[in-house]
Image (cartoon, rainbow, N blue to C red):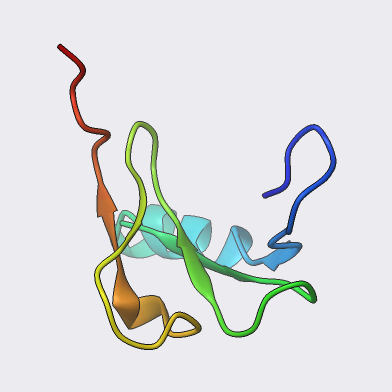
Length: 74
């Protein structure tokens, strides 16, 4: 989300809709989609400690990403 300034940003996302679905229908969000003026398309915002990992395909399509845990370091 461009924390601490600089870089490209995902500056628009809806957290209220997924939160309402979680509370009212018991559907916990696995990710929230974000978009911004700096980059085309949408990218997933993943729950901590996972992050969006590009798996191939159209870089602007959210289907080209999965939420994955960071690789462990030796």
